Image 1 (tube, rainbow, N blue to C red):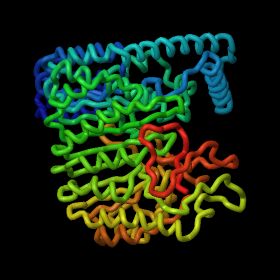
Image 2 (cartoon, rainbow, N blue to C red):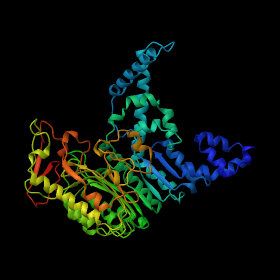
Image 3 (spheres, helix red, strand yellow):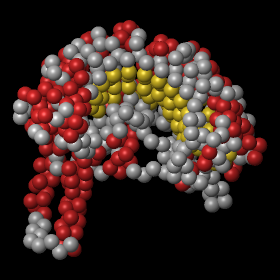
Length: 556
């Protein structure tokens, strides 16, 4: 049977096994194949458009927007603002030294495998090649930053009016190593092919090591890209139903890099009247010298309060990695926010009290079905909870310097929080990960791991840590996987949510074993020198919301 006689559904299914350029080559062989695979081709490759911030990718976006055939298929635009931004700037020496070492190692491996005609190692030639690679790296980084500064707005402003069906707009983050190694079938991205052609994958992977990836270095480009994205949405009057103000890693956009005026925030709100999904992660400051842009912070929270009644899905984070954020901020938010349709809530990197959590969930409870809490730190005052000071061999964890009464009070606080969840009438799915008190992590123990509805549950959940980092970024529709998850799924569980969550046992975590920095303090970073700087608050005293000095906030 001729391929042209196959039903369109079968032909489209066969084409899904082809790379994009192969599918494109097949489609131009005849009018019949072109027409029968058009809808599937557009849906498969243009429904979601991840966009690198390079000039080639912006040109590609304009081409899609100009095409009557393709533009109607676009439903989502994902802006990737962290090209090379997840790594520190490198000079030529720091860039080329790892490359020399890696090439020597490759040559040695080829010799050990007995490969014939292994060429001698020419240090001068290799150095010249790496110098050229460094020059290309610098040029790409300069171009990327120029686009972040202004050019992104111009292109989006031109394209958005034509992409009428693209009602989902937002930011995503992917390490350069993942981008260079990603397969077209698993990850289609505008500008990716040009990036791979410009840089040798092995050389870039060796010179910009994955271990250098730092979430805090993403916060500035996220803030800049968010500003450019919002300006384009306003100028094009493009209505949005789903908005991601942060990446798929819940790291947060830095307030200081957001360049939006009060009038621009006000102009954005009418374009969000149909918003049903919001991902908002706010990162206060990364360095002691960073200023706290309180006006931008309040504008973002006001935007959240405004759109809350129609939201069905919300991911929210507000934290300062260097210090404890005043509880007044979440308190004000919890008192003013009103949900009426919220079905799914993800709280990440949040500092709150039990009472503020109760207020925040109060109007969501009648409709809320799915909830996750990750890197959540309670800040209720407890008399006697002191900073333990430097670690010693005799005192290997912060909890060992506290009385049993204080530890019991911390556990009671979380038990009260668990009761709030257990009493939610519609809640069907709960995910807990990296919970703590004032920046110090607690460890959960689950005796009903076999009955909570998780088929992959293991006896020792605390030992089940994910180290396959590329998997975190390969699915652009989901957030970052937790290192330790305690999940309850009512549809598969053999026990009730209340019985499962109330039997969870808690103990204080040794900071030397903690893999997660919780919001609130640097309490997880205790070492032989102890905490370098600290400021204390008396029981019941609230931190001054304007006095954010980069110090560690504790209770005495």
